[in-house]
Length: 121
Image 1 (cartoon, rainbow, N blue to C red):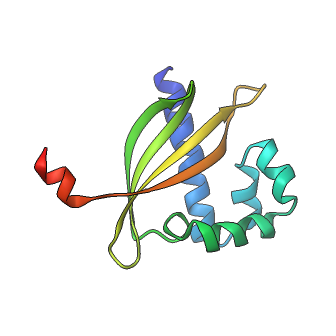
Image 2: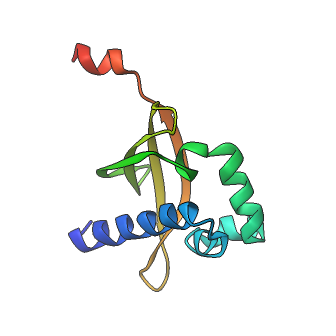
């Protein structure tokens, strides 16, 4: 994967995170892959799912981009998020390249961060 692709992937995720902050459902939805768009049909349905199931992504207190890795031959951007209550959560944004070579978000997985495990290493 090229550095240019990694920058493009990060830009897409940053745009979606900003759209969540701005309550801009249309922009947030436009950055999801076609399959997710078909599943949710409307920007506001997508935004409601994010608000209820992905709260750390919807309103993080802070975000640290950790880099791109590959999960099942797909690029995934790894982020560390701090929730509004100070809890750390790792997010893996699974990306999908479109036929025009642009990138869209194909999914997001939230993983808990165990601070004690990090200190033992």
